[in-house]
Length: 450
Image 1 (cartoon, rainbow, N blue to C red):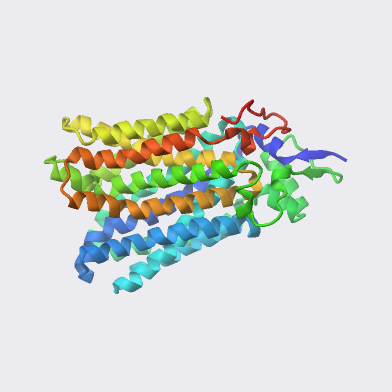
Image 2: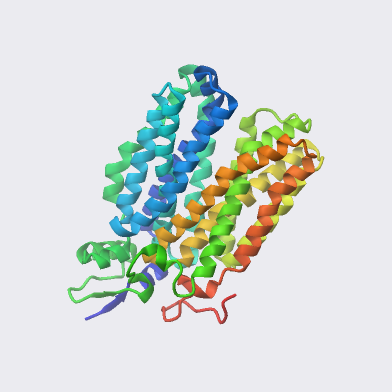
């Protein structure tokens, strides 16, 4: 009888077509997810004009998706550890595709808001699941790069919405960009066929033949035998409620630190995306359309995510993140000072890299920190708590803008969360993480909890 450690096989596997397929599917799902989230902002002026809603009501219509994302990240992240990650991903895809298209068919602002809330459940819920999927199946030596490369599809979806939105809205009305978001539902049969299920889930459900086929595709040197026994680390043999597991085995303090980091980073992301153009226009800059800001911020995000992932595979991901948050504090602060327009574009790109890009790397770190059996739960709760920062940011910064403070003070307020996030990540006890757990072949535990 052979004892097979499935995580060791995944850690040591060489990148092949199997990994490329998972990366492609997860990235495509995230591109669709990013499009669905960005599309409301792109179409908002046309929606306000046609529905005759005030700016206050329009803000509620947009924020309804953020509320949905908060609940979706928590509950659909948690349920994935019970029903299987593949089915959770499909449920999320169906939710955000069908209900975003439904919002495009509504003519009432309240119906629109309900549709966006339901779509937000899927938008928020799919994020922790695809991160957990990519983390589990990526070779250890390129894991952070794989996760951040996949998650950069989120920024690609935002750019796609910005590029397609103008033409579609001008020629076919604002409804067209929402109806286009329903197309990904056609991918569901292919995802169910192509995307593998979580390995610990297959072990616990005794679906060993399916597991053996997956392992052979992941690591071709593995040859299935009838007597194979698949071992799970103690951390993967979860008993009781998954949420309780986030606070066991010394993970409680670090879980809170992750929640604070997610909250602060998403606060910065949505503060910038909501108020950057307004603040800079008020400062007298002529930077063209808001589309330019969307593209520069998201282009910077892609560079920050992929570059941060590359660095995290070569250095300690925890300290890479601390440096990225420090860069966010500096770049956002600099936005409040007069600089030439070309320099301002560079600073905006750096701000995108160190806020949106850093958020993606933070997802990767959370995916590496939690054991596989509670990975979706851990990421989902961190993302859900973080969404409250996304909801509060436009309100808090809007209040400051209404106080007519100097430009520098507005951006300093946006930069403070970066400092708090840097301290929170620095305090995470990496020695308690799944990747530092003692007793795993090929994984060396840290000598301390720093």
